[in-house]
Length: 348
Image: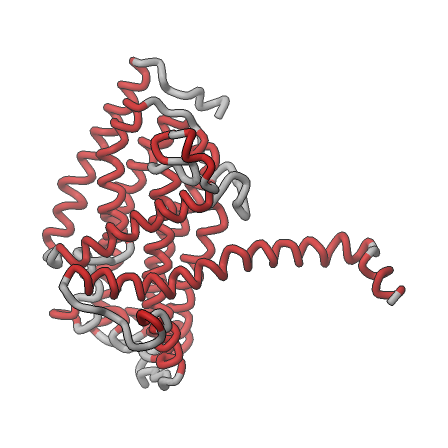
């Protein structure tokens, strides 16, 4: 017993082992709720779509069908993983893992409450932009490694789609940064903005949400899957847990983009509209509610809108969003300079 106490008080434990244990604990506190949220987002989607289409949705497994995500996971675990004989086996298996892991890694810089962030870095926006851009590599790798023309076309579609809408998202982020003067996500949430600045940002909020739909390959922009013409696209050759990782990676990316929207435009963990009386509710609850609101918009779009043709998708990205966001950056900068509301970028 005394030896154990001495070890816990030793320089080796306090200097090397204890920091690792603390960081691991923080990571688990973030990752475990995220994985549970991802699992039950699949349940929520099926219930919301069912309500909009006058159906019941999952209701047989557990009370109100609440155990349906668990049953789906066990079913996929029990299936055989089939790798095509002509596929590149290593890349074929790595691709879905990469897609899933990148969506998790991005959460390291997103603050869910005051001081509740794994890495409060000063370039959080650039980090998120880089991670979200890397997500397409998993889909590209899957399309190429599958040795299938349908899968390869799906991967190429996803790459073209990502490039088209990353440009618009980047310019939207510039508009937000003009109003805050900082790349730190906590500073962006805490920045005091006048009501007219939020009004100016509202069109960019709409563009960001639509671009997020395209970034995550969600309906009506789910062209990389394209069941009608590509019979599933990039994941057509996947089965069992490799397919599940793509499926879950998509939902994790939805939660990630919703979290980014909440931080950049909806005030993060702060009460809505700056109402002080609502501050009695914990900040993390407000953050979760805002993320759920954006996720509901994702599901609403899927239930309501038909799939775009690919030329319509490209036209929207390059001929509508790109010029609109470019013009809006100029307008935002001009109005902020005129109103002397531009933050001191050097001080930020």
